[in-house]
Amino acid sequence: MSPPSQFTAVSDALVAFGTAPVSRGLSPPGARPAAWCCDDAGMVSEDAPTCSAKGCQQPATWGLLWNNPRLHTTDRRKVWLACDDHRSSLGDFLTARQFLRDTVPLAEIPDDAG
Image: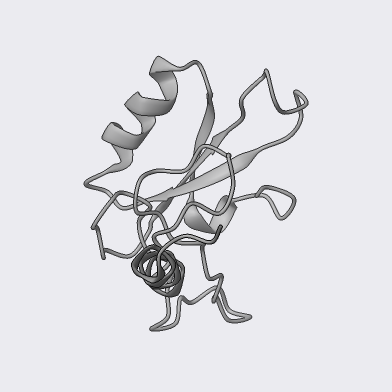
């Protein structure tokens, strides 16, 4: 038996607006995938990556490199992006779970992180 149409419509809307969970990975609520958009000179374009904190629209200036040792190899690094205002709160969240490995400026995020 298929779900009532209103449930399908809500699911489609969540996916369309990017708020539906797409994996079981650790992501801040409301997080959007990063759109890397630096030009060859390292200048950030107007489509700059934004902070991963829920509801924040500020440009990201920091990369919080983390991994979950129960899921990831020791050299694997996932990245949350943070503005200056949310660097501490996102870092505290990851630190409380013993996931935070490093915090680096946006331009220094390793190419293999993600």
